Each structure stands twice: as C-alpha cells, then as structure tokens.
Amino acid sequence: MGKPVMQWQILAKDPERASAFYGALFGWTVDAGNALGYRTVSTAADRGISGGIWPCPPEGHSMVTLYVEVDDVAAHVESCRNLGGSVVMGPQVLPDGDEMAIIIDPEGIPVGLFRPARRKGGSLNS
Image 1 (cartoon, rainbow, N blue to C red):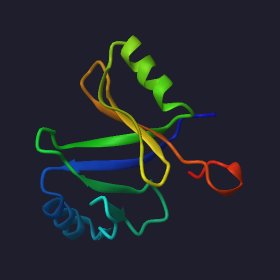
Image 2: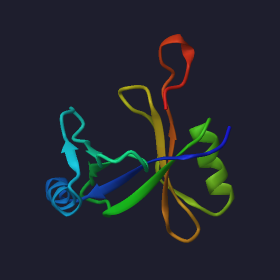
Image 3: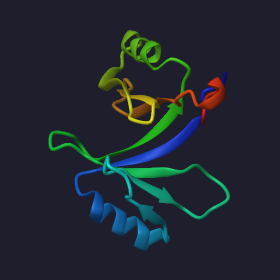
Image 4: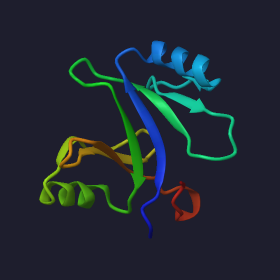
C-alpha cells in the first residue's frame, strides 16, 4: 500500500474567522454541520484534495497539517519516535471509526496520520 496524502487541515484558534477568511479569499464553501465543531471545506474543484478547519485547543498552536493514510497508526507513531520525531496527539479513534494521530518531524513540521474506518463489507473507506 502506498502512503498518499489524503487531506489537509487547518488548526485554528478562531475557526469561524478562519472559515470566513478562506471562504472569502478562495470562494470555498465551509460546512460546520457536525457535533465535533469540524468545518469541512469544499473547494468546488475537480482536482486536489479536500480539507477542513478544526478548532485548536487553548494550549495548542495554529497550523496546517497534511494527513497521510497509513495502514497502522500506532506503528507509524512508534516509528516516528524511533526516527527522532515527536507526537502531538497519540492515536485515537474518532466517532465514525476513523483513526488518527499527529506527529512532528525532526524539522518541527506537523504531519497527520490517518487510517479510515472499516465500513460495510469489511473494506476500508478512503
């Protein structure tokens, strides 16, 4: 399995302001219709990858993160540590069953790790 970049995410202290800014700047449509406060961004383009805007916790830092799909989030978190990186957010399962973590590479760049949930029929949904 390759390791494709599947999504980008903006972690923002003021996600409403960020949503309004990027919506006005690029004409993106932002949908916040979920219980987690996640804002799904539609670029209305037939190319590129999708993304979203997530509320940053008070102790966090605003950043942009690319999410790379992996087959085992915990194993990649451990490999990150062994290769000199660090972990911002350890592996966790989201309410829809997707799994994610956020690591920091040795240069200080955040990278998200993502494994889609198994869906009906046992297949992975990406």
